[in-house]
Image (cartoon, rainbow, N blue to C red):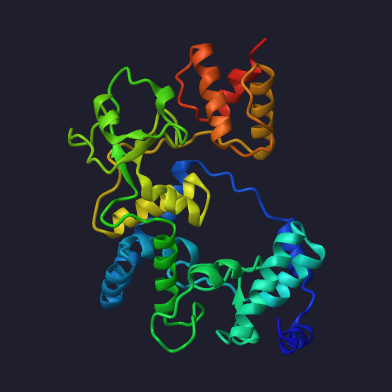
Length: 356
């Protein structure tokens, strides 16, 4: 890094105690899938997404041709990340990252992001005072961390700068498209779609660790709401994001590409559903169950500890429900005679607490 860039950093970096407050006081968001989708795939967000599709029709056509990524997928990420550019963040990124690297949690991670941000400034893509973002350093319309910017941001409008911060979202949307392409987006394929499971379907076959050819799912009786066999897009997994009482979702390869953007099943499901709606399609035919008791992180740790104590190892008790937890829960449900949907919720925790 050039001495001039280092000196500029020393001139502009400020300690921001409010950033540490934000990191220390992140509220645990306890939302059921029903409530989460009501917010992220609201009718208003769908309306704005369709309006953006009309407004940027020519740009979206260019992105589809250049990056072979569907416009509705790009717009859905834009809609979830910043409300189609309305909430891009107003924290000075250099100062925010410097504060987190100096005194926050995960200091090494934020130190690396700070170095990446300085390389962006050194390249001349943005002036330091205009490099704004979230308190955690996520930037622009697509909320790229600086390291992701260096890898995936593009100068689509040809002005010599990869400007993801401008009011004009051209470079930002192209950068989202490039990110998806570089993570293996398959052109012409959806993220996933609602499916119906036949009576007697073996629920232990569901989950992120149960990837099978679509033809095999069809052989198990998986059908669209219209009774049609699923289109063969290769391998897929059946997800029960709200358990056996909610819709079944057949997630294809592009679902994993959304997970690369944000490793949350709820996020990927929301992006997929929003893209589906922006493209003119209707809501799920089967309603998402309301009123489900969502587990806090402490509750989830207890669930993991109880499963492990019963011989179904979750490989750690971090309070986060990943594939290992879902697999262990499914195995316990099979052994205990419960529907093996692998869905951790308040009812399941009560069942575990009742075990001798």
